Image (cartoon, rainbow, N blue to C red):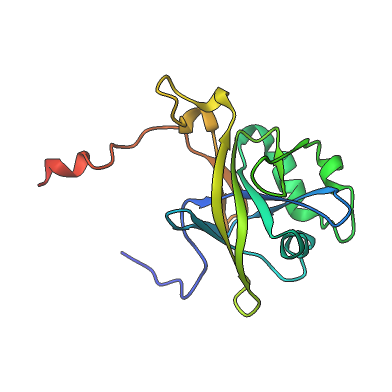
Length: 186
């Protein structure tokens, strides 16, 4: 039996995205964003509230990074989501994250997070709060690559957000094979 829950912002899995920017004085900043995903071949869309310091930084510098939060850094990822750089300018330092400047955009790569999308701002819509970025590079730590040099999701160990229970989950088990399992029915 099914039950209607009404209109809700529920989707699974919901990625935990850590957006990295530099403030006007060059201080690294990061925030946790759950509402985002790939919206084109080299495009990412993330919904960012207009009061966020991170957004102000993006609109000034026209660049940002997006890292996948992982199970090893749940505490740090949650911290940058619950603390605002508007109130705590040194929140990046307090989080324990370390920044390295991207070679491709004017934004920091968080050393502790193994996968980072380096993005240039395409647009921000104040009415919908939708930030769109052009992915100009994907930077990965070699520790998450498999023998073929591709990203191994088990090694990456990304976390997802459960907006119903306010929990973070990890998934590191293969459930099936894309473009193959469906052929059994075909």
